[in-house]
Amino acid sequence: MRLPFTVVHADSEARDSPASNLHNPTVHSPGWASAPFPLYPQEITLAFTGAVSMQTLRILSHELFVSSKVHISIGRVKKYSVPHPKSAKFKYLGFVRFANNGEWRMREQQTIPLNGVSGSFLRLTIEKPHSHAKNLCGQVGLVDIVVEGDVDLDESTKLLKVGREGLDFQMLTHGIDLEEDFVHAHAQVEGMGVDAVRMVRRVAMLKQDAQGAEDYDEAERLSGIEMEMARAGRRLEDTEAQKQDAVAHEDYARAKALKITTDELKGRLKELMESVPLRHRVDHHRVR
Image (cartoon, rainbow, N blue to C red; front, side, top):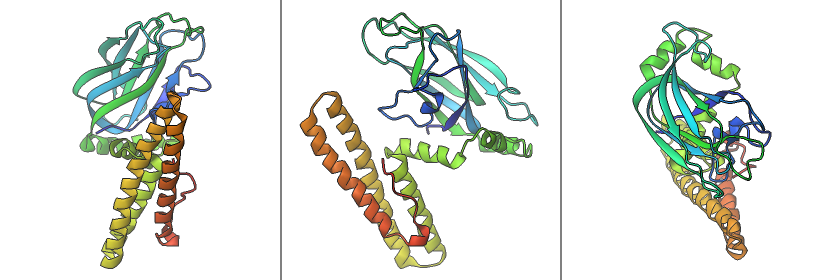
């Protein structure tokens, strides 16, 4: 599974490309870029929602701000220690190189096997960029970071037992919403937008409530709504991507037709939410 994370430290960031862009990347996301004329190396530290076992790391480079080399370190927390990046002990795993794409606008992805290494933090140390005619300010950038693996429930539970200074509390003090992290992870897995996922998850909770109350007619009705929402959400995300691709290729007639479809799908999602009891309805004013 794709592990949700939050960037808890970045040495710098560009105003229009903050590190928070890496939390929920889309095909249109600009990702993170360093501030202009930064000091090197630049560091980014990711915090996971507990102790995790990491199998694979994928790093997608910016098409213009291409780092020559990225170093990878894993942070572990000592037993009974506060789970914080400053108290974590980092182990250096190695580095990957990115090619100089010259004058081309190409994004290179590096896939690194991590073979189940465990930790709570991941640190990327990013070296100077390759020269590029359009990288006038000597920046580096990453469009996407994907860490695949599993949550170590036993070790995560031990961290949380440290007390109020456990990982959950530390992450919340950084403004991290764990539920939102899992919503975003769910969206990535299911190929849906986050707003559609919120609707599906809410209907699923209502279905469970109906099952608990032995209201099987309502449970069956909600099950049908849940399935139709999921289908509409996946189709909406796919159609949005097709529309953006059409715009990028200046095929505006196709983009216009796809916009009609996306508007219809958004309308259908709202109609489905109208069939959910008012007291349980979620905010659906923004459907991506």
